[in-house]
Image 1 (cartoon, rainbow, N blue to C red):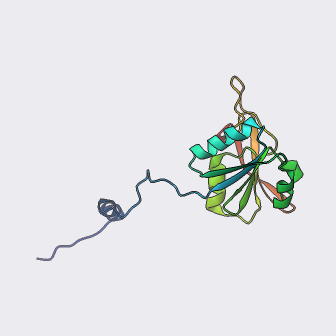
Image 2 (spheres, rainbow, N blue to C red; image 1 turned 45 degrees about the horizontal axis):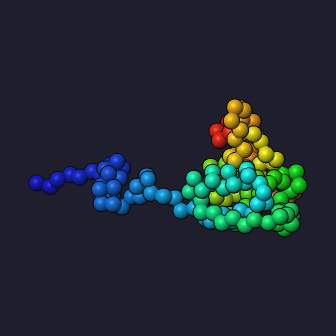
Length: 159
């Protein structure tokens, strides 16, 4: 007598997991290295670097007295300038951008120069102030002559 065997999607996934064919959920993401250029006297930049390292990004820090020439070279608009400039995965990241927004940028790969958080909003990564409520702020995706809101945050929470 022949056995009828119907394989469901769930059965296939469970079988694949049993044989080690699927990646465990806890496996570390492979994220590209960030090159962070910053002023050595800026404490919030160091706090932001700790934030992205905790999110799994490998980081190389370059300290220079004047980051402005790099911003100009990489096409960061003056209105979006902040205290540190990052090169990662073919993009530019300017200022206190949350790591989750950077991961989204790298996953979606839009045609853009990069992301920026203008200024230094209270509560953005690296700008946490004890006893102060975080500001709402925009993460802007930019390229030559174009800027759009990529995401809106309050502290580390997307809103």
